Image (cartoon, rainbow, N blue to C red; front, side, top):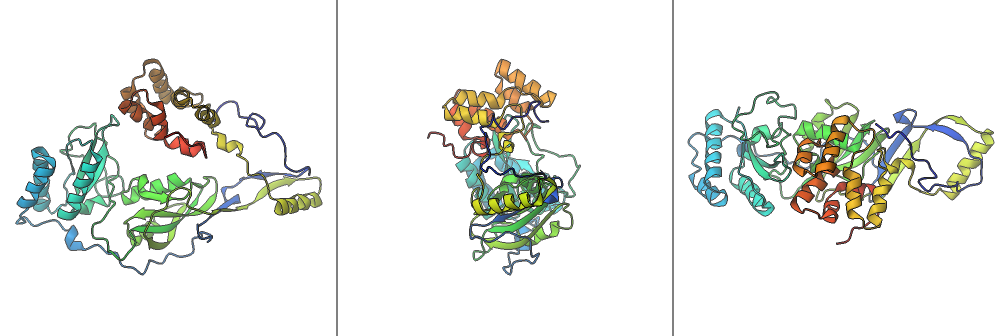
Length: 427
């Protein structure tokens, strides 16, 4: 819900027009198809959806590596190596999973969650162990509801691709032997990182994402859910408007093009194509710009000649690329106030502006904000803030690890780079 009183142009510092011409008026984005955006890639090429052909490179995964082991398979030496890496409890849990996979062929085997592990380097070592030693098993990292603890989740590989949230046959089935319900194990399984990827093929699949009336994160969320991938698996150069028809480049790590192509039959208002494998994934800012095709409706002016003069002036002289009102946010706390606090070095003020109660928000969320403001209970806030409040949760998680360090909390928050373009926080 938008705030009750809109920010005026004068309040945002927009005080005059760049031209003395009377100009004309019209309705922008009356229909989402009135606003067409094509990304311009780093090489200057216009990003368009023109092909659904698959790349010539073959990246088929060896099915023998994915198959469940036979009941006679001897994993004793590998299990002893795993015991040295992770301890007795995790070794016993893995042995139980292997026995079930061997006995049931992997058909209906629930994942297991290993012991909490705060050491990221050690978790990476465990992930690599499974890639090298148990290629039919796939791992990812799950988070505890306290927002701090993390564990590795292990699953039989043939199920990892579909995931519980990806439309697979496991939907709706009750989980067994998953340990505490405090672990966020219900999310789609992150099936990134096949160890069987050919050495001569780029490890990132780049594709063109065409979408209608959806923002970039929403469209990739739909695709990720179908593939069993987390949103962070995708790389892109910039977010595109929601109320528009847009085309942009996206990359994803070690995913076969055929899997994405197959989704086109199930996607609505989204299409993917122009596939190729590349060595590096996209990150924010890796684009030349965007090309807009805009339709104005209900145009009114003194005369058609005046419209022509105004358009010719625009084409000849260009325009001032100022930050429009949409860049100041739709919440009751305009984001430029957060930016002003950052410029003044008032880190705690900036954090409070993000976390404090605000008008027009859902009552249950505002109640959590009020309780945190009164009592400062970080655990309570993390338990009750919904996951879409990414900035708030990131700040709270950092404050829990580093109490009182508001600058560090802001550094780890996406809102800083999203909202305040060009402001660099001190090291």
